Length: 95
Image (cartoon, rainbow, N blue to C red):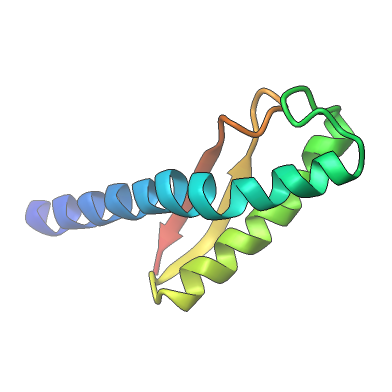
């Protein structure tokens, strides 16, 4: 059972890195920064309302990306804890 738990933890870690380091920072973030700038927002200092809008957009994009890659995730959460686009917290459950 410990070996299974370790495999699950390693899988979660690798998928989290893929979603954060690659999918968010390389694919999604440039897109949402462009959206924010087109709205006249400072993407490095978002208001709470702007942060919520960007978070919802990112959550949708990352959920779609994970599904397209068959990562087997559920309940993906996405948070910009400091109201700026360059630091994100991504969490999820493995199916």
